[in-house]
Length: 260
Length: 288
Image (tube, rainbow over all chains, first blue to last red; front, side, top):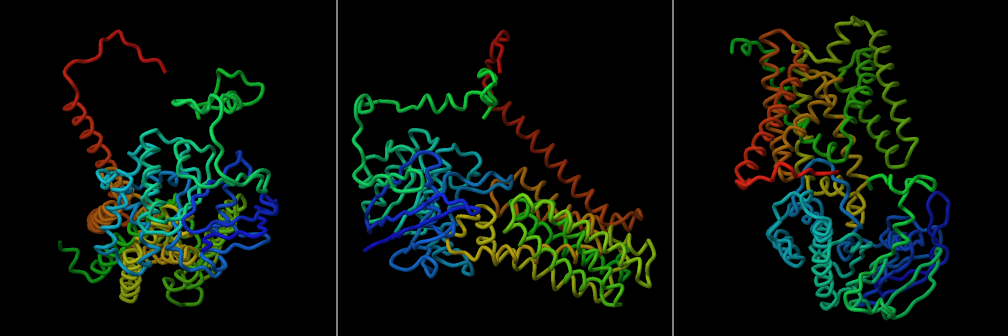
């Protein structure tokens, strides 16, 4: 069964087209990584799949239903890149994860025992059950990311969509993350995730789709690491990426870098 | 207290207590969304509604509810649509609202300055029996909406895109928030006044969140602080003859400062208790 079907999709913001003519489909049980450089349109592609950006042309089907008529959003779990900027009003890990049950139970029914059990089991799954009563703002970046995946898992979705889930995440969290995704995939779940690089999720991924300049440039099995990339313990860094950000602007001395 | 043998005082107290509960219950979502000042803007718009009511010899509370609700829905539509132009549109709406209100009140039969001041800063003696009924009914409606839809509103205010992907009716919930904000502003204008309504939505939340760890607990504590400040505000202002709204807001601010100092002191003490006996040698200089 086809879970996601994208046909000749064009998407843009403010009349500027970002994706031009993208077609891809994801079958049930597949784990697909969408790769591409910054600004290639890979995040726009999954945002369009989720209905957060309206398509300019083309069509999107979810679970065989045109997206515009799709109502079973509980079947889709979304993990955004990061937790919304802290607002000052504290919220516990448990409260944030409980939001993930709304799609299943609807907004009129108060949370019941099943909802609470689902929250606990999702937190158990990402190894954060002991933090259930802590404010999310006290968690590390990686733990916040795990909170977001628990929020998506707690609705028991069939499809997980993740937007660069491992960006800036510590090693321990990446492993907990990969393990939780692995269990979800083993249970027959479908995963679509945007990645900057394969990293620790590499063993999970069945197929990669490379987006380049608003179109799909390559589709196939994930590339095997080659050369010194294949060394165990190879620390994959992009020094050029940092250099570009070194100065405030082109002519500014690099040692006066503004704090990020 | 002797003062509460008067009916008008009981009416003022009833209104204040309802608002003391309802304003922070709504305000917590506004703070979470970083829209702390929106209540102030809607208060400006509500003044036009008061002017319309006075001019047409209708209840100013009802016309203010209608006009400010229309204004709040307009603001929400601008917020959903707009990016940079939204800020300017809001400013136009706010100043249009207050200027329109002042002009309309001036045109009405009862155009004294004192009358205008009552709406801007609140007054104890102006709450009519009919007003109390409106305040209680609408206040309870706001409280119910904020409690029943708490999980959904929390989700929308916490992460609007996630809420959208969850299939929640985000646009409807945002409009619900806009309308309840307008309703709260208007029912609070009798006791707290239009220029200080926003404080009662925001200050109790700011006070509560310094010592709480979760959203629900913050909401409950903010409502307790709001209730206490409003009740005490009415009593104190009657006693020392000050404006009730300003007195209430100052009491809420006192609670804020007290909690800030108290929690700060508790944190320092706790750190001291946990600190090991041995301290760093004095010649260690930390360089930034």
